[in-house]
Length: 353
Image (cartoon, rainbow, N blue to C red):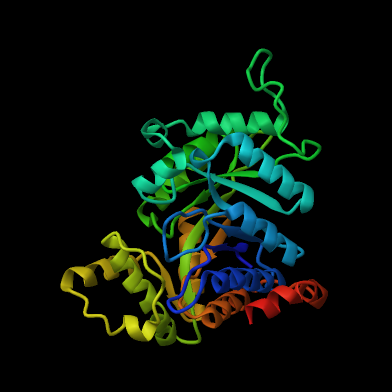
């Protein structure tokens, strides 16, 4: 296997389905990813976006970790400025206590939504416009290690349970800001290629060129999150990806709706400018047969020197999404975990059936 594969799941909501079904599909896919040999299963944080049901990643992480056995489970990511660092320290100490050695804490600085929703989350215009992610990170780390200096107002505040460490922290980003911060602090870095592909190479270089070993990491570790849709043939995969084409056009207009059936998407009367949006969008995603997608991902990994590829597949049909991850696992030679690992969470699988 040229590099490990992982999963980013935003709990997509297909048109005609329900939030309950979308979340149960997440549990079902996590069980499958665990059995297939994927390394991590991360969930995102987005708000007020009807196309995805991932407003509470710490809640979903707990459920995913409970129905899986070996795969690492984490946030891709927690948008730290939306939260008090103490609250995140408490939540992830709790997750680590429940699932020791399997939790990742990925941190981002965007709101994960529009400006009005960011205001509802952060409560004041000053908090919305504040550029204080490094300071919030320091506060989170201090809660995690009980290392506030003498005289600090939070010195006596304990993030309970405090007999476990914070999980490994990953800095997430879509530009070179996060890359440089992760490098200077010695953290692993997750780059959002799936919506900021043009920054992938500069961010990768900035991260590796500036990395300083620390107690958080002795060497750089770069994860690239990519959009991929895999099917038996290129034509079948392109049909499935029609759902994403229409979603990209709607997103360019500020519209976020549940994912539509690809049969409906391919009949949409796109204007020439909308087709240009789709053409640009398709240049930055990986769609095709297993051989086609593998070749594309290997080329990207070689160019960026990524250590790990994290795949997000946002198609309408959950069975097709499952099959895409199955084919990629086979194409990349992932080592499937034994049947006992898959037998434990049958309740989650049956719930998603």
